[in-house]
Picture (tube, rainbow, N blue to C red):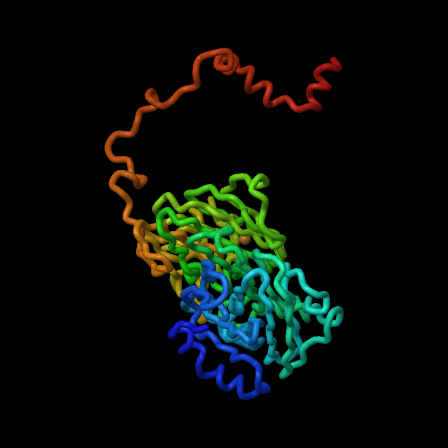
Length: 467
Ligand SMILES: [Cu+2]
């Protein structure tokens, strides 16, 4: 197969060095230097399919060796830009965290070489795949761990199409906290089945990196401070660019320590695939939010009939914020004038307390912060600060985009008269405000009976009946 010039260039350099260190017969292990979405990799042989695009990622090129499709993953330390202004020292595959997406076709014979360049042993588990037990990648249970410097081979025939992922099953807590994971897509053999025009994939992951430092705290269980899609946080997450009327699929898998209700604005959609396989059409129902539990994967589909800039995000509001969130005290409703004077006197400067009217002001200010961290709330849209972070991006639906054009089309030009607006002139007087209709309920309210009923507690009723 051929790979795009951009990918080929990105894969030169280190890849050549890595090939020379392993024995002949192993396919080249390209590396990726860019943290931005690479163009989809159309198949040059075999059945046709619509390739996926990986948010802030890429698909691993392969080579055919007889009827085997061969890939080469290299587990290694990487530097990953989480968003412009912050880099993390992670572990990943082939130059990035997460690793490259692997795309194959149902029925393919797949051979995957895994070279370990980490300082400790590892394995790869192929989450959701139906394969011989000895290919399942559980260190100690189904194979010896891959020692540093060693290469192992996994091979099996892919049984079914669907949505899968890969991750280590050796020192798992540490290696996943360090960013080791990747997406694995199996396309149907029949190109007409489950066909969509755009197919986006990403993994939900989380890091706990103190402001000013670079390495995640690997023992953190719940209090992560960076909630990421494919090891990127808003505003660093690629937008999902879609042509109007496209059939769109968005697939994601959760390798964090908590569940994520993924919510998309402007549309309803149906879950069409999980890591267990395609859902049956009669089992589907409409949703606007789909929860993805730890270790689960979900794919939903919709017809992109509404143009616009539609938010897509985790609905846990703490997961749409960046670092520094947890130690900020709550001052809503507190008059801080006196405190400002006292602290300013104490520190001999002009202390500025924040948050007595909420925290939105932080989104506008983009305060100075230590090196290598990100503002808690950030990002700007065409109308001002978006005040988000973490697991947030934008689905941009536009008329007339060419197939496979994923370039940012800029902000949506709203048709005249379709944007919420500030009220000008006279406010409606109370007399014109809508009123409850006259009737039985209104009469009870007027007599105060409604209020009395609400105030009586079950215990009080008993007492009342007793005397
Ligand atoms: Cu979340």
